Image (tube, rainbow, N blue to C red; front, side, top):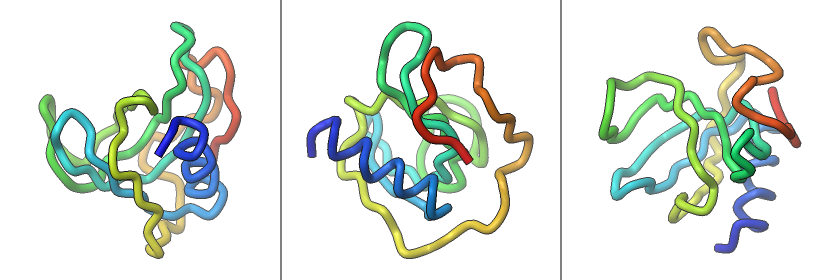
Length: 102
């Protein structure tokens, strides 16, 4: 799946408040997508609240910023979340351009 197609799936995940699963840095993740756009460094990225799966740093659940080009095996699940994740803030300062957010 190319970056454009991943972007489309992630926009749907945010708008429909649905969990996604993917592999990142060799670890499977389950996340609630919150913000999608381009970082201040110009990279397409998504800010997620990871609720399950592996992590190379820290613990789960936690907030993470994932580069879209590094996401593998992206799947939009049928499972919904029904409220904003803990400590969610609109207008994430890590992004210079936001295309979708909760």
